[in-house]
Image (cartoon, rainbow, N blue to C red):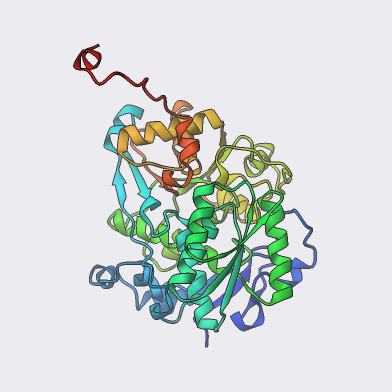
Length: 415
């Protein structure tokens, strides 16, 4: 008997894992192309039983270096299926200087720049590779703006599996290089991420590849929820007041909501944090829906932002995000490319963390919230830093000014 069931977030129908692979078949009948996914599935566990197995003492004595420590509340049957690249338990850094400058008591940065391939997406890819190994799959495919594909390529090759990657031809060269180095089969699409997503689903059905696509594969949320479990553990088994999430497809925010939900169901916490969705102004369909008070999201067919990792016009988990923001009394806001680029430099100067544009968008969102008095100074804030700046150095170069070269003479140094 499986330790979890799938529950459709739309119709609430339950399925045993063997009945369905990706999305709710009933709700998917009404799915339209280039629209947020209908019938996303969330894993529902036997929380009463698991609560008897998981306690703080067990975690304190667990020597696992990655998120395998949370196996009792993950879909995998054993952490032996996890790929060799250890994923998880990234630093939660106390940003004291930043907090002082912004007038807040506590700002914590969940630093996923140091994950194996350099981004938060390693969490989802590690989980999907583990499930694929458990299911006996040998080829995994995904569509991505860059980081999810890089993560899948790295995790798959470490587990001696093959990956097929669909990415927009405009993806940063550093990310394409990473994928190629890992041995992935690259398919560069003449179009944007949303078009690559549609093509990858068609290809997986045609060639019987296992599909890792974010949100479409329910285990991506389960991988991403591990960040919430770590935050809770690193804050000495407590829940922050706010968690600020840079958002494209919406699956990171969905995962954070799911992780804190699971902790609450297990009796390990008594509340949920308020979640914040931060999008770029040029790719803000979720924010637009929230501000308009809409329950449905209107797709943006031509998203444009310097933050490629959140350059998404059709947020596949958008419906989940709307529900999560509503249930946690969350917020949604958009930041400009100028604010994002400025945040790259600000984050580096105040903390020593080099973030890519999408990750810096969360810092830009934090600064905007402070300027609008949305956060009380005694509230505890966690900001997700989701990707390493080395993944998109040309973008970071726009945020700084280089000095003029000088003659090799001490007089010029003095001047």
